[in-house]
Length: 165
Image (cartoon, rainbow, N blue to C red):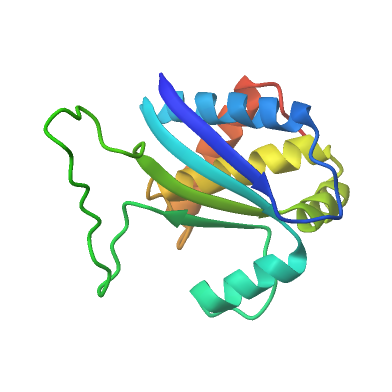
């Protein structure tokens, strides 16, 4: 499997331990396996509530912070231009990996929610990450049926990794 997690930290409130990244890489591999995804790149960014509030307002028109946002690379909005990569004759692969998209997680919001739900911050981060990943693949939760499907998939991945409540 050639699936890659690229991450960065744009918040200063919490240290991001290497164990979290290792855990999230395992979560990514398990979620991808369960969905039949064998390659691609997922970019993960940790932010604070102020940053995610700004993104939520700008991209979703919702003027409040949220816990996780996903920006799929393969969704085309009406006025967006398709990205075309030109390859040299000797090149065999595209110059960038097949990016699935970006996931943005608010660490303060994840911490608050983990305390509210009575489970670990690691479990909450994993839940939000799987949630974001499924959005990258086109899943949504606009109605009860799609929400139940998405929740079932999220919980199955977390349970398989022992990340239960």
